[in-house]
Image 1: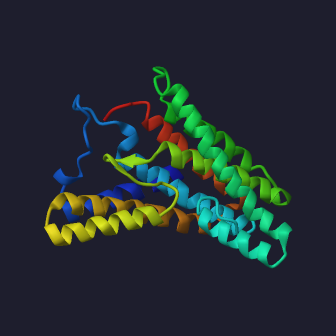
Image 2 (image 1 turned 60 degrees about the vertical axis):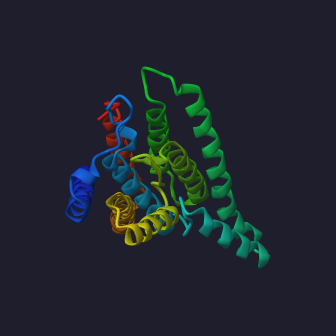
Amino acid sequence: MIINVAVHVCQCVRIWMVILIGEKMLQDKEDNSGRIQTSETFMLGAVLSFSGGLQDAYTYFLRDNVFANAQTGNIILMSSSFMKGDVPYGMKYLFPVISFILGILVAEQIGARYKSSGKLHWRQIILLLEILILGIVGFLPRGYNMLANILVSFACSMQVQAFRTMHGYGYATTMCIGNLRSGTESLSVFLRRKEKKYLNKAVQYYGIIAVFALGAGIGSILSRILGFSTIWICCVLLTAACLMMQKKYR
């Protein structure tokens, strides 16, 4: 049921984009052989963004108001706590930041080592690790909130590192500020040059932001209903993304 809702949301966003810019402008970028890599499609990015928004809502509302993805917020709260002399409180924000850094390092190493693997795409390895980590988080009781936040931050940072391009241009599936900047810049260029490719780019950025926001909103509601097991919804979404990548090209 949850995965059907997520897919329906992604499809609705895509329909909105088609209405604005047309089906032709929404075609995925092809490589030199005429094939489209699944990891760069809008639908995969939308599923990952929905999951990213849900993860942030989960840790903020259920795990001591810590952000899983928005490390800027954690750094601000950490610094504020340290300046007030409340070091123990600041540590609950510091550890997720460190974990985020470690996740990037691990994902980069996996990408470098398994990039040429023919059996399993290296990004699928990242997704499988993320599913395992988030699955464990769902079992952690309230007394282990710091560990839960550390694990979620580690998982989401691997996703950030692994999935960085859509239609050939950079984006993020677990945060919005970069997408917001890039989308608005593209919109500004379109208004100046009247070239539809820039409108296409802007709408896709805003589409990813919209899906992220929906994931966060739905996550905040489900967190009150399902409690700590809410994070398992992300496991379902990431499993769907992993299965989508079984077909390397679209």
